[in-house]
Length: 235
Image 1 (cartoon, rainbow, N blue to C red):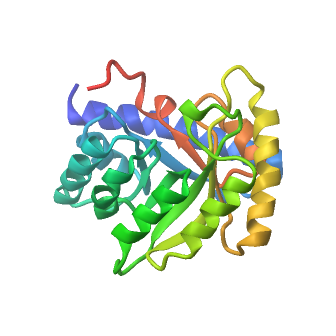
Image 2: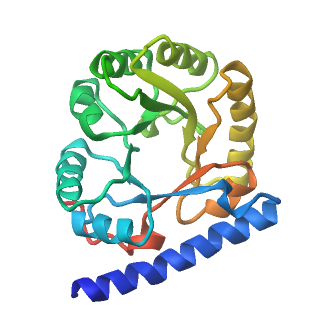
């Protein structure tokens, strides 16, 4: 496909996704600009990120450090500036690499990871924004924390001058009504905002469940398939 053809394809998809977000906001009684689209571009080339940036997308999510690092360099070389969100599970030994390009890490789910990121981010001109990942299904394979662990991790983030606690991230459980799950997340988000004023970001909802996430207060939705198409493989 030519660059012009891919740009047209992405532009059409972007219109449809933005319309879905706007309708969801209207149904929830929220202004249409209350929700930020984070384009999840894992397995897609830097050229797609450049095209999306040209179409007005400001936030981009990746879940593997090796791919994200190279892609961020290529996008920067291409003259675009986007906010990079790391949304995948992160090993502590990748902290130094991730803080080189990421503006936000959405998947912090342990005190040790928060501390590693804090050490790596020490001296940054702009603190690294952190979202604590909440588990909505208690499945350790999918990441996230529950109960008092949430506040222990949050305290570890706020105690580091290189980090800024921005809020929460969650993934809807498999096989459960996402509305019920995101309703539980909304309760936790309210507690978070009470404990840590300013930590009001709620990253929740993907291509299949963004409407439920917006209904329950998501401020960011992470959209991949509906925007970029089906992934052929994991490179």
